[in-house]
Length: 464
Image (cartoon, rainbow, N blue to C red; front, side, top):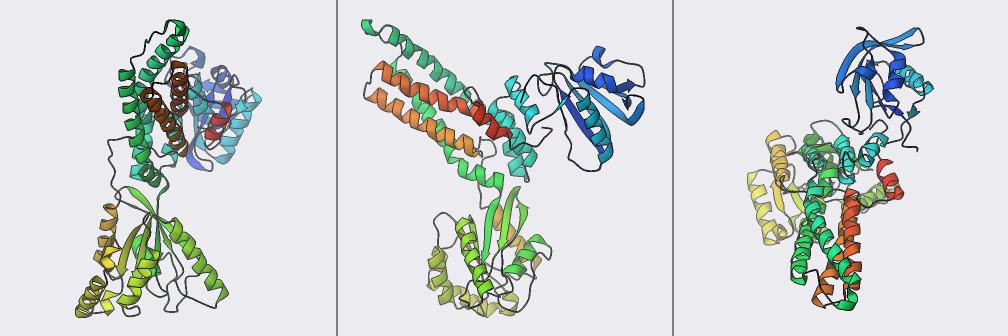
């Protein structure tokens, strides 16, 4: 990848649409576009002010390809920091491909995934954490995921660490200065102030690390497994939650042989609901495979919804199963289903029996429903709305790479604290401070490698 090339790509989604946008970036972007563009008013792209839009026609030699709008963004006032030209054309797949082919023939190279954003990073239009937030914003599928991506794009993580890193860098310079005067045995860095600073950094890192579980769940969607005996009504509940006939429902036990998944946004957070095969011993080979997969989904789910048909499962059986599947790292909800067939007195007695068996002590909540009653389904959704608590005003870590770098930085901070407390020599202290600065720098891109950049931008879409 040569960053001096002028690159081109389709920046809108591939396929037929009302319009499409083809983007050029690089030193020759304006010159290449001018070869193909004829303004309706005789205006030349090269002499236009930045951020101007011109109406005209896209030609290949003397053949008219399309009527287009051309937007000009001159360096450094563009997304990439280079000259950028965006050609808005009609969304015919033929037109899109013809324009791309012509621009490549004139000297533009087809952009690699994420190369426009990579150039924005290299030209200091954004730091690395902000560049990664661009991809997160594109892939955001819920209000909360969108909020986190926008927050990171505005520098949420960078701002949280930037000031602390700069202050630590100042102390590092003083420690390095001490090494130059080691024979005079002088101290330029106040160890008390340094200790107070690294305590602040440790607290900031801990807050960010503690936020990862929530941030990661919001970004990728929270997995919810619907589990229970065959014919408990799991598939009916899934259909009711999604308000569509997603899963096949019948009175025959073991209808669901494999997991069925779909997503639903509740309270701005995306949940991935997984309807699983009924839990029971079976001689049916295919059904047994489904039960095995159910266990796998249970192990990975953040929320378990245990669905019970009280007419087919005693309170004692429920209590035993719940004690067996209890996980400290998952939220457990008990759903008493088919109450429309049970009657109020029988339901009350069932609840009393569950309470006697201390079932409530192993579950987050017990909810009695009928999947035919929309108010009952709304009751479940209301419970989900309160399950995940997060502060929309604070920075949340949702990126695995950031989490790993923060963990490494925390290790460095612990070493620095130990060095101060044990009055270690300046050269040893300097090594630990350098390591901490290095790890913090990898988050925002002050310190980076081709491997890191390659791994990050390979996951971008082409055109962004």
